[in-house]
Structures are given as structure tokens and as C-alpha cells.
Image (cartoon, rainbow, N blue to C red; front, side):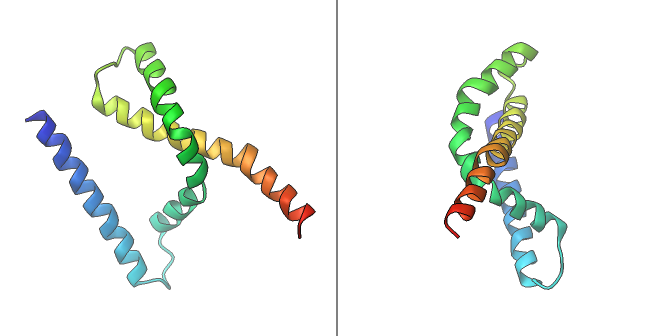
Length: 108
């Protein structure tokens, strides 16, 4: 029953989020805050993609062991999501952004 509950919540949340995105695109003239947040996170998507496996394999197990939460799926999911976003943002801010500024300066 527990595995079924996880699948149900996962499918429902995906359904609701994509429904929200669809509604936002139906009214493009309105400024919708959740869509702006999704767009901001989307600008960090490549560094998130590059770092998420390092977060999954090294950071999440370390944090869960340190906090004594091994085996807790909800703690795993929260640490994995927040860690991936944090590492992706930091990589974007301190690596991608300066390199893109240098690229734009050298190759206008």
C-alpha cells in the first residue's frame, strides 16, 4: 500500500503541475508568479542536469546518514530536490554566468 501511495501522489502532482503550466500558457498576457519561478529554475536547467547525479550519489546519502534519516523516502526526495536546485544554481552563478559574460565580451 505504501508504494502505491507514493505512485499516486507522484502522478497527481505531475498532473497538477502540467495543468498549471497549461493554464499559464492559455493566458500569456497575465504575469503568473509560479510560471516565472519555473522559468527562473529553467534558466539553471543545464547545471542542474550536470550536477543532479553527484547530489544523488554523494550529497543525499551523506546528509541522510548525518541526520539519521536513511530509509525515509520523503526526506530523500526533499534533500535530492533542494540539493539539485542548490548545486545547479551555484554552478550557474559561479561558473556559467561568468563564462557567458566573458564569451559575450570576447565574441560580441
